[in-house]
Length: 444
Picture 1 (cartoon, rainbow, N blue to C red):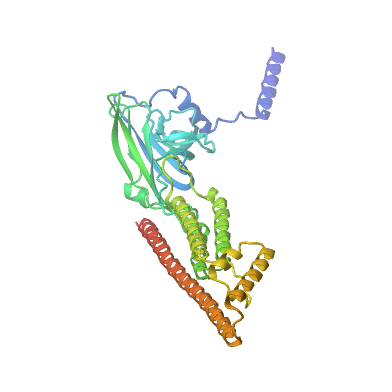
Picture 2 (spheres, one colour):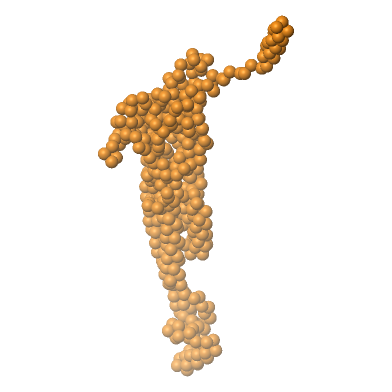
């Protein structure tokens, strides 16, 4: 009996020593235990309210980061935004004292209920980094922050390019849940704070953000009221790049064309110069085609400006060609006349210049012989007087032709000056109208 008791005591002693040497099993962490407790019986497909008549209010906030693209042809705008949603989940509530003072945790967004709030103007999926978690505090306050790149449908009016302004909107609403019974929306911040918040917007881009006004309203669809929060995004294009790259070179070419009117009218240089200016403007127009916005409804005013400038250059060239044609309309070939040809009658001389040279010499000899036969060898003094009279007559005819050509040249110069002032008037009126329009759009 004594030996058996001693054996039992030895077994108990060794078992106690082994139990003290074995490592103690660690306790489950408070974070792990809280996550398991909250999601054990949680159903993410059910709206998180204890009373189904309770309305879940979702607070929405928006921060605009940048405007990436404005497509006039497809009537769409691509923006980068920071979208924030906050709501109360009545099933995700706990006492922080029971979990080592833990008052806020992150849960997988796929494991909790997420409101079906969408952007109604959404037309295409943009690039956005996945955010797999939401933050939940002890009172059930759920926060979901997501950066988004969205492509929105927007009515874009490109007529005033590059001084255009656009006002697009992002309307957030629940896709299925009504505002009266299930999901209501509200602004997380005040409308004044949202409108004046530009600190995250990229101000060095092509577009300038004017403000972000917002409003809350009810939208009725299929006899059901839906809550909607609409954020307007009025933006204005910065025109300096297009003014320097498109408008100023075009204006310079037009000024060069206007200065070409100071070239002589009877010079071929003017026509060659105007053709060179027109060719250069055509090359410039082809190179800047990609810079202009493409629209399917209405042509931008700057496109009309380029077409009208090219039409004015063609009109200037046609005007110069018309003046040159009128200037050379009264010219005649200059013929050298000998002293003996001055004795002939003018009509016989005009007929004789149409004949070959050998016929001209034959007719001159015959006429001189006939003249000598009829006059029966006049005296030397009479012959000299007759020669001088014929020479005087020829000189008077040349002088009359020179005076007529001078008068015709003066008439062409007056016509050229008149057409130049008409052309300049049309150009100034057109440029002034465009300048007033663009100035009013720029400072509106």
